[in-house]
Amino acid sequence: MAIEEKERIPRNFITDIIDADLKEGRTDHVATRFPPEPNGYLHIGHAKSICLNFGLARDYHGTCNLRFDDTNPVKEDMEYIKSIERDVRWLGFEWQGPIRHSSDYFDRLYGYALELIDQGLAYVDELSPDEIREYRGTLKEPGRNSPYRDRSVAENRDLFEKMRAGGFAEGKACLRAKIDMASPFICMRDPVIYRVRFAEHALTGNKWCIYPMYDFTHCISDAIEGITHSICTLEFQDNRRLYDWVLEHISIKARPHQYEMSRLNLEYSLTSKRKLNLLVEKGIVDGWDDPRLTTISGLRRRGYTPASIREFCRRIGVTKQENTVEMSALESCVREDLNANAPRAMAVLHPLKVVIDNFGQEGVKESEFCVPNHPDHPELGSRVITISKEIYIDEADFREDANKQYKRLKLGSEVRLRHSYIIKAVSCEKDAQGKVVLVHAEAVPNSAGTNVENHKPKGVIHFVNAADCARVQVNLFSYLFTEPNPGAAEDFLAVVNPESKQVIADAVVEKSLAQAQPGQSFQFEREGYFCVDSKNFEPGKPQFNLTVALRETKKTQAN
Ligand code: ATP
Ligand code: MG
Image (tube, rainbow, N blue to C red; front, side):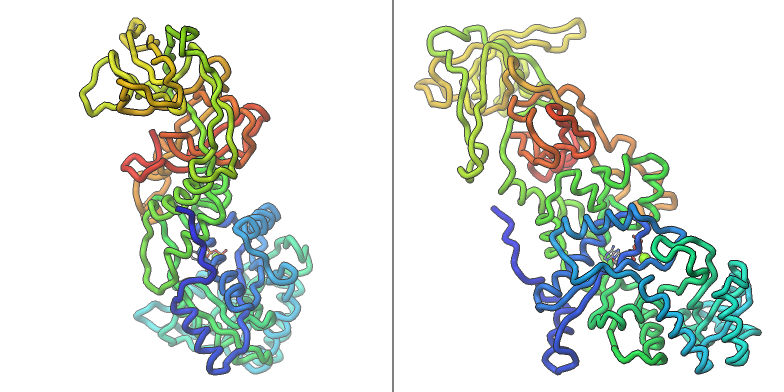
């Protein structure tokens, strides 16, 4: 069944808020934003945020901005910026107007900081970062005022200017909002709003050596862009007070509102750029787009389609309850999509040669069959498959002897070769270790693609013609971690699954597949869904990555 992508985001608490805001006239339009920090590639958690923010804009005929939250020049990189733009577009969304950056607003942010200073609501602190932490107190104990807290406006102006001019080393001074050191909300205990960083910024170069902090920057950037509904994850719930406080105390008129939803946590995967980065840096995975990662680029390389990821985000919904979603929920979305849309093909992953000894005799001659690429979609066309005296079947599809449950090839009984003849295994040859290396069979005359009286094979197996097949590499994957919640492990590197990738160097596929192009997906009949790897592509020698098995089983991912 095809995934019916319903037009609208299913109702959730945020659409309820928007509906009420529109009805009661608090706003007459919806403006959202997706604000990634360009310090890594996007992952499936970001997809949830993207589908929601861009989806709301689509559903309410509003706008969604893409804004790089680039306030930390130390960790940010052009490679990440480019990958993020690509991933958002690949998911099927387009942002409103130009790409924005928090750094576009550095001048204005500086001006708003001065406004706070002038009202006696911000001061330059010279406590060290460690002292600031110590003075901050704990959840049980209130914090203490910094000895620099009561500086005059003039002095604060001078010192802030000195910070901007490079007169303080990193960690020697910062600007703090003057709020309440006894607040039950730690984020309100005189939060740092500017710090000194002598680092070249990807866009502003060396213009600044002070950089605004997230809590100060985000709300003002939202206000500058006229965002109406600013959606973030639950960790920022307390910070909403600071978000509102800043906007309350500066001269900007716009009043965006922050709403928090639960993060997406997905079993057997990491949704933290910092941790993903470590896997990449340590070479545990083959880059940010390793098919075992649930980064957007990894999922793409694995064979996930944009529609399947959007459908997944639709199904998980938007709530305030923290939970962890099973990997099978993501897998079934891509399986349904590929089942409906991927052309079928035959591939033998563990080839065993079968010689059809009566080939060429009466009724066992035809060697080409035109078969449909998809059972339900004639528009996906057809292809020619061939058969001749020697074919390959999968090792698992032959046994010398087996009980009645075994509906594949065994000595003395018949099986249907998919789209082709009924064959009967006659004898087999073994190597020194006793492993079957060759099967002799006979085809039932005139049985190619049709029933023959008195022959009722119990099963159908797939095959590939030895004479003109292509030899390809197939990569099978299983979960990258041995624990369902690797993020919670004391050391997530210790729960990496050493067998998460299995390379089959000499699988055989029907000849048409040699021409498959990077990113093309197929259902290998009776095996699973596979996608041509886009990273190691050589024309004529595609590598195939397992996307997902045909059915959900315990061993879904591999073998
Ligand atoms: P990370 O820990 O991976 O760096 P982050 O929240 O710091 O995550 P950002 O680049 O700041 O990453 O995130 C951009 C947007 O995506 C934010 O609005 C954030 O709330 C949202 N987001 C990030 N991770 C998730 C997640 N797991 N589920 C839902 N939304 C997320
Ligand atoms: Mg962040």
